[in-house]
Image 1: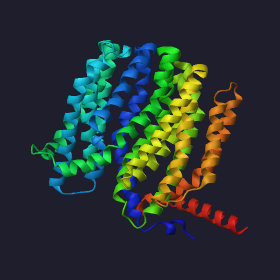
Image 2: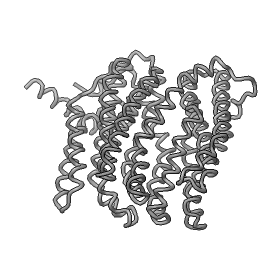
Image 3: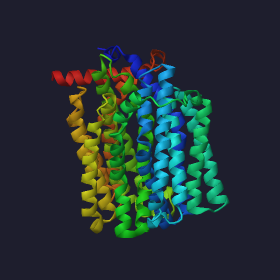
Length: 500
C-alpha cells in the first residue's frame, strides 16, 4: 500500500495551508526572530528593574488594545474572508475604523486615571500613543489578510523588522534613551507599518464617510464582543504572574521572569507563522465536506511539530540562556522550561480556538478562557508568595493544561475531528520530565535530555512525514523519492504490527 494514495481528495487545501504558512513565515519570521535577537541588546541597555517596568507598560498596552478597539480586527478577518464584494468590504473596514475612533475617544477621557498607577509615572502619554498605533497596525495587517493579500502581508513583516531593528539601535545604543527608547521604537515601527499597508494594500479604497451600516456593525460586534474578555483573559493568564511577582518580589524578579519567557517565545514564533495561515484555512474550509479529516490531519501534525520543537528547546535551554542574555539574567534558565511546556498547551488552545472562530461560537471561547484566567490567578496568589517565579510558571502551565483538555472535548461537539489520547499523554509526560531534568545539575543531564529528545522525535516522526506527503507537490516528491519510501516503510511496519 502506498501512503500517498491515502491522501485526501482536498489535497489543495493542504497545499494552500502550507503555501500561506511559508508566506506568513517570510513576513513574520524576521520580526519574531528580531524579538529574540534584541534580547541581548535589551538586557545590556536595561537593568532588570527597568526591563521589568517597561514590560509591565507594554503588557498594559496589550490589555487596553482589545478593550478600546472592541476586538474590531478579529471581526475584520472573520467577516472579510466571508465576502469578495467591494461594497461589503468597504463597510467592514469603515465599521472597524468607526469603532476604533470611538474607542480612542473614550480612552482619552479616562486615561488620566491610569496615570495614577505607580509604574506608569511619566509614561502615561507614551502609553496612550502606543495603544493607538498598535491598534491601527493590528487592524490594517488583519484586513490585509482578509483581502488574502498574504504576500503583501509578508512584505510588511520584513519592513517592520528592519524599522524595528534600526530604531532600537538608534534609540538604545545611539541616543541611550533607555525605557523611552524601547517604547518609541515599537510605536514608530507600528506607525510605519500602518501607513505602508494603508497605501500598498489600497486600504484607503475601503474608507466610507457614510453613516455606519448598523445592521452589519451589530453582527460584527456580536461576534467580536465575546472576544474582548476572551483576549483579556488569555492576557491575564499570561501576564498576571508578572504583576503579582512585582507585587511580592519586586521589579528585579519580574525582569528575570520576563527573560525566562523569551525562551518559549521561540516556540510561539514558529507556531504564529502556522496559526495565521491556519485561521484563514479554518474559516474558508468551514463548509467543506472533508473538514473533519482536514482538522484531524492538521491537528495531529500541529501536535507532533510542537512536541518536537519544544523538546529541542528543552534540550538546549541552558546553553541558549548562557549565550543569549547578560549574566545578570542567567538564572532565568531555571524557569523557562516550565514556561516552555506551558507554551505548548497555549499553542494547542489557540489551535482549538479556531473551531470556535470558524463556527462563530465566540461565547464558548470566552467561557474556556475565563476558566483559564480564574485557575491562573488563584494559583498565582497561592504559589508566587512562597515559590516566586517558579510558582508563576507552574500556575501558567496548570491553567493552560486544564483548559486544553476541556477544549479538546468541547470543540468536538462542533467538528468531529479525531485525536490520539495516548499520543498526547506520552508526549506531554516526556516534555514535563525534560522540564524537571533541566532544574538539576551535572553533565549527565544532557545525556538524559538527549535520549528524551530522540524519543519524542521518534514518536512523532511518522505524523510529520505523513503531512509532508499531503503538502508537497508531486513534482517535488518525484525528485525526493526517498521520502515516499521511508513513509511507505513506516506504514508497512504499522500494518504488520497490527496483524501480529
